[in-house]
Image (cartoon, rainbow, N blue to C red; front, top):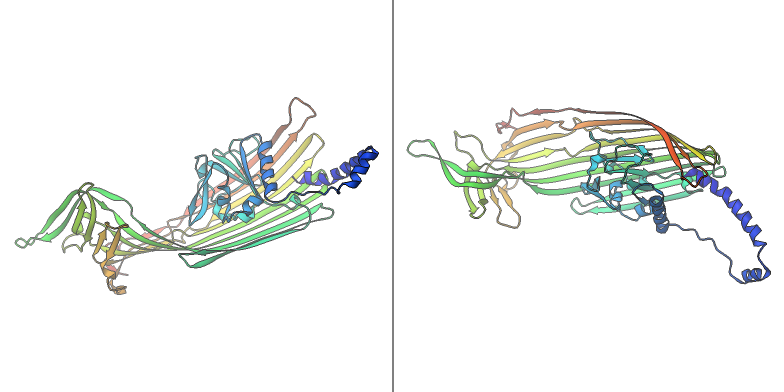
Length: 503
């Protein structure tokens, strides 16, 4: 902590005086031996070994089960965000979105069971639930992370799976001037784009290390593309048939091909093109008017945007419009079949649907600010007072859209190859004439905008008695106010459903 760093300089003087006094008590032979030996050099441990020792000290001194990673660990991995850094910890698993880590699961308990703190202060979440999306925070923002896997009385409640405390860098962590930066690039093979990222940190202390200021900033961009082929499942126990006209009566006649068969519900070919932008900035100011008091004012701002454009070529399969088909006799699964235009007087018609939507877009803003005062009242009692505020907002209501335009035409399904394929008749000779397209469905909105605001006040005391009976006693008070809200803008039109109106 900052107070221990401040007291370290005064302890060096005492240790030097003791070393000088003990040196005069050494005999003449010892003096001759010292004169002939090489001078003792001070060894300062830095880098990976220092980070491992720091993590081990945190685990050793903790009263519960905790795992930690330090800045050197984070800097050694090509992590895009904090979630990917946390997966280095035993028992932590992550899920991904767009190839990036997003949420964490600890010891099998999902994201909604975890509590996330920054410098001991609870972080607001941009989702309507309790889960926190770590993809909004760059790995360059933090200097370390502690994952508490058991509850502790001095932590906020709510960490059923784990309590994750992210630590940001502060100027009193290392005295003097510091500057560091990094520039990276990652090539995306599908989008054929290079994703740049840059980060820097600058810190300095002044007035005999009594005042310090630190600023860090990171910027990341990605243009990615994902290609998918998917179905919404299979329809079991279906009667596969088509309809023809009876030449004598002129009535429609159902021709049954197979019964109790399996047919895929649909077949969608999806291209999702995204542009992701992540900006993080952090500022920390520390002041120590005396060796017993340290005042810290710090905060961070984070902005994360996803601009998504999804294009989907979809085919919806109906068991009553199958022109011809083959089936696996053992499983009852259709291997190949065609979908044909319905006969006049019957309902429905196959259509090659062109779907365009932006449902994966995000606009997230996170920020947190706090004031901390640490006071060593005397040799036995230490007090910490902390006031903080945190807010998060995902402003996406009304910004997403979903549109379906269809072109009437037959198509064929073939599941005999390594991968199933669908051939659309309307694209046999290239792109069809736009006049053939028909509006099917329009939607705007659908997603919610979520806001979360947290205000916290804390007072913690540590009493360390001069006794061999017990080590220390911790006590304090905690107050939190939280307001969470969500609203939705939604509208849809389906009077054009059935492809009856030109797009």
